[in-house]
Image 1 (cartoon, rainbow, N blue to C red):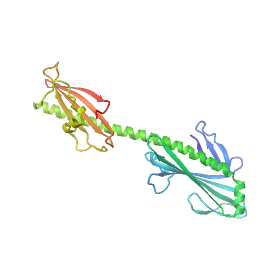
Image 2 (image 1 turned 180 degrees about the vertical axis):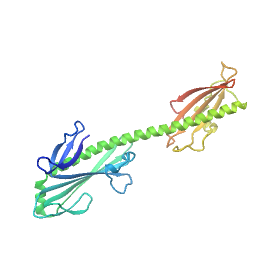
Image 3 (image 1 turned 45 degrees about the vertical axis):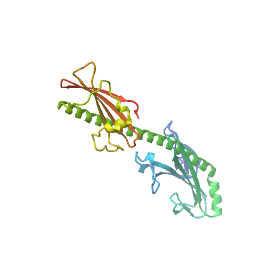
Image 4 (image 1 turned 45 degrees about the horizontal axis):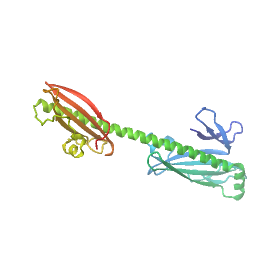
Length: 297
């Protein structure tokens, strides 16, 4: 990643645009003379104004939808101080007799799903208004080079923006999975406690001779499943749990239960399924955990 900034040259005292790569800190190289300042601001979705990087929090970076780049340049000395429009669109008077101008670009990003991001940009140039000073301005600053640097910065911003979006999506997916997992795990534990309590009260339920499989049928699951919690914070639906009793052929005195829990994330498509084989025999319980790798429906 390259870092672009403007500062005064140690040899000439003139402001210059520098570029520093991440391979060697402190080895910035001058690119073009006459660049006083470089402003980079970021637009958030539905934001009222562009923000500087220092004003953005870690959670806001994935929400950036556009990048504003503004370069303040100056030309050769003239006879008087002149007005120009700065990067904020405000009319200002030059600090000396040099002609000043602004080169501004905006890079916009539009997500099209997955990791595809379309980057577009527009550019504008403002400067002092007299033709004579405009000619001096052109001679004092190599405008094509500055525009090239602007394009380079926008390209770097576009690459960073695409990486940021991908990282943001990955982080969101992980959070969504953990949300669904914790919901399913809590529902499974609640159902296990309910089964043990019912068993201690000698509750009788019909038994199957083979391992249950009703949890694989959507209609059967939706009909037979219970919701141990009325709602789960951050989930689109409350977690569900289906209890299916069955008999172990090898252990006549044991009562077995297959517990299947489904937890949700922020959407119905984000689901985690967990299972528990609970065996109760002579007042003791055994738990055999299983994770369902794929959704049954």
